[in-house]
Image 1: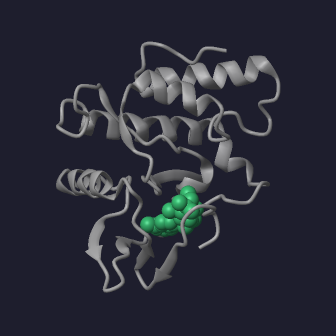
Image 2: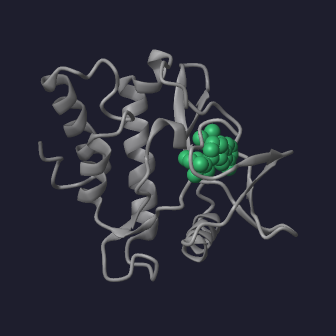
Length: 183
Ligand SMILES: Nc1ncnc2c1ncn2[C@@H]1O[C@H](COP(=O)(O)OP(=O)(O)O)[C@@H](O)[C@H]1O
Ligand SMILES: [Mg+2]
């Protein structure tokens, strides 16, 4: 599927098949945790196919993998929705065995191409994250710092420092991190 530059991801009906990463056992446990909580911000892990590939639910929607995107993808409402989704899975993982000695589980590869958007009548808004291969225990403040460099936050109109800083601050605040990104 387009948008992937590491794995070979193939859609098969309402599933996707992808090669397992070295981190697969952790990711599968994480996706199981999300399923137990009925959190819809990630695909479901459905098992392995006969070739040993992981089978995930296909999340219908729009994945902005091309460089030029509609303004909705990076509007303030979408930024807020990304932060809310991040906060949700941080809260779900805080204090779990998956977070281990750290605060939460971080996605570690948040970007528009790993985000699925849907339009419920007010424009495209993020509804789920895919590609959890790099997920690992970490800190919410790390997420806000790493996301600052991601186009999810520093969109194409954010070349000016004040606007970029404002978006980073908004993201960190909405995500619930006490520490915003450092520049
Ligand atoms: N479960 C899914 N539902 C819908 N689209 C998906 C799903 N998994 C991946 N995709 C699409 O396939 C693209 C590549 O998948 P991804 O898992 O990100 O591969 P890579 O590790 O190569 O980046 C994503 O950008 C997204 O557009
Ligand atoms: Mg990806």
